[in-house]
Every structure is written in structure tokens, then in C-alpha cells.
Length: 126
Length: 397
Image 1 (cartoon, rainbow over the protein chains, first blue to last red):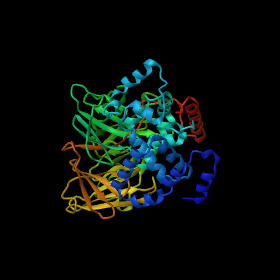
Image 2: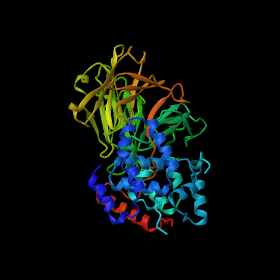
Image 3: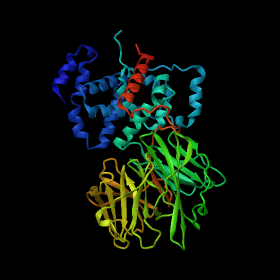
Image 4: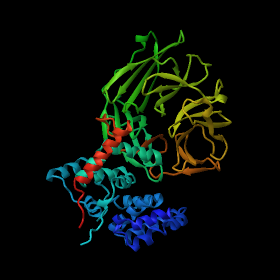
């Protein structure tokens, strides 16, 4: 990691949302990543922990931080976490998770769901 | 109240990066979340980038296993359980044959000789216009020797093509002729192209796709003692050319089969009771770039086998998935030269295997060519991003 970029990140006015919490999560990441890089099981556990303790907003901040810092492994990891989190979930769950609202006309959504009904199979309870 | 960040605040590039890591089934479902997501996932640019990402990172690779009328797909990364696939060419018999695979599209045919391009990941297909059989007498030959197909992608014209080679021979004169026809998805029609001046060695083997061309094993003459060669058919200029073999395989009495590993041409040389070697052509059309990937002695680690075919590299590139006798799958470690048996839940006892990517590629010619010229691609990308951001990714306050 480039420490000058980190300093810039904190100095940058646009990043008012950065709190110490984020710094303490993102910065130890390289070390943790190196330690658990080889061990997939531990990564999975860490992932589960992350999902339980971290709200989508926090995860968003982590992703934005990793992206800004050009920290590829962390970005990769967080993005994969999000992808896994929405995998077997309903459309409504995904909307809540992403902070989105449906902007479809009344009939449109039903039409989509009908055409690709198979893609909604195997969805977990919300 | 301080503005709370939500996923909606993620930059466009980061969002697509997240989407690339989701399976295709999830992406199809996400189309129903909102209009911007629908137009993003359906955009030719996203589809192309998703495909490129899958190829570059060896993700979304599936193994298709076929036994008679049953088709199964299993993820290459996990090789855990085989999912049965319902193909769209059911007729009086459900027997199906796979003619090739490219960018997530499969080309399949049934007993009634209907042919379709099919993307099993998005469950869309297109049946090709019927093509009558070519006749040997039209070429002054007495019988049909072989008929082979090849399916692939022409990247220059952004087109998917199916090639059919009808080979005719005359036993007395040892003469031969061929009729070659190509179906283009973009043109939506069959066209006759130049003849192939070689004799196919295998009666029904599909062409192997690598580097924008299809490959078959052939001989120069219709004679028993001819040496095997490889012929390539370029999907863009639609011309047949010879592909040089590795130096030590040239003019040798060894049975060869051509295949593809990753996007490279591979050749399997069968020394019968002794061993099987697999060669890979690192740089297309460069003879010196052939290297021996692996060599397995018949009685070695693998246990006895009659027939071996390399299928794919593992995600790390350190192992190769081999098909043995169309009955077993094994991982061969290139460094340790050890072999690991693969047990897939629900796998048929006898099968033909094919690699197929899970992709969003539609079974229709795309309206615009996106991404071929970088600025055009970028323009579309930017427009999509702007539309996407402005169309109301609503913020959570």
C-alpha cells in the first residue's frame, strides 16, 4: 500500500465520511490478507463475520476506501462478499441491500419475472 | 441528517466489478431490480466485458457432459454436482449431440438433424434454417466419406458461425472432394465457401476452436499410409490452411488428435502401448512455439486407459483436467505429475465432455459492434454510466 495515498485519503475533503473505524478496518487488511491468503476456510469465516457485523453502509465505505487506495486484493474480497451476499436472495432483499427502489411500471416487472422464472428458483427466505 | 452511504453510491466501475463476481443466474434475476440495472446487464458492452472478465480470470467455466439424450453441466472450479440441462431440441427422441461451444453458446443437433445455437445459462436458443444434405454424385464421387461440423466465433465481424464439411470419396479412383458450407448468425443464412483439399481422418469429429479458427486432423490424400496433418479454417476469412505440427511429430506414424486448451491449439499424440503426449501451440501458427505439456506412460499413475483427451486448465493453471476413455475425469498436476480422480455427483458413467462458459451472450446478432474500436466501446460505456447515474439510483437518506 502506498502510504502517501492513505494520507491523501484522509486529507481529502470529499471523504468526510471516513471515520477512524474505517481506517482501523482497512489498514490492517494487508497483514490479515497475507496471513489468511492461503487458507480458504479462514477467508470464508472472516467473510461470514464481516457480513454479520457490517451493515451495507459500512461495506460500501470499505469498498470505496479499497477502491480509492487502489488496494486490489481488498476490493476483490469485498466485491466477492457482496456478490455472495446477494446470490440466493429475493429481488426485494437486493433492493434493500443496495438502497434501490423499483422504478418499473406495474406490468413490466411481472413480465420480466415470468420470462425468466427459472432464475428465481432456489431463493432463500429473506 | 448526515448523508448515509448506500451501495447506490458506488462508482459504476465498482458496481460492474461486483456483478462480474455473481453467477449468471443471479445477473438474470438482478435485471428485475430496477430499470438502470436492467439496461446495464442487457447492454452489449456489459455482456462483452463480463465475457472478457470470465475468460481472463478463468471464472464461470462449466463442463458439459453428454450421454445420449441427457446433458449435464458442472462448474469447473468446484466439480461437485452435475445439474441436468433441459435442451430445447426435444423431439421424438431426445438424443442430442454437441457440435461445438464458443463464448457460452453451444451448438446442438438432434436426431431429426435440427440444429440450434443455445445459451444454456440464459436459456435462450435459435434454430438454424434447415440445410439439405450435400450429395456425392454432384461431385463425381461414389460415396459420402465423412461429415464434420465446427462452431466458433468470428471476432472481427462479431459473428457466430457453424461450418459443415461434407466429404466425398471414390474408392476406386482414390479421388475425393468436399462441399463446405458456413452458417452465419449475423447473415442468418447458409453460404457455400471454398472446398477443403484434404481428407478428414475422423468421420464425425467436431472442429476444435482456438485463436479464431477451427481445426481438424486430415491427410493430403485419400490413401492409407498418408501422414496426419492439421488443417485450420479461419472463421473470419473462411480459408483453409495447414497448421504446422511440432517438429518431432512431423511425418511420423503416430495417431494424433487435435484439441484446444484455453485458447491454444493442442495435439494429443498416441503412442499406443507406450505413452500419450500432449503438445500445446503457445503462439498461434508459430511452429517453434509448440511445447510438450505432459507425457503419460500407459501403465503409470493414471491406471490403464485406452484414450486420453485434455479438456481444460484449472483456474490456477497448474493442473489439467483430462478425460479418460470418456468414462473418467482426472486432474493432472503439471508439476508433481500426480493425478487426482474426480468424482462428480450425478455424473453419467459414459459421456462426451465439452467446456462451456457461463455467459450472457444472446443468441442473436448484436445491433452494434461494441468494443472493437476502443473509443466506440468507451463511448457506449460512458453513456451507459451517465444514464445509469442520472436515471435515479435513489439515495437512502
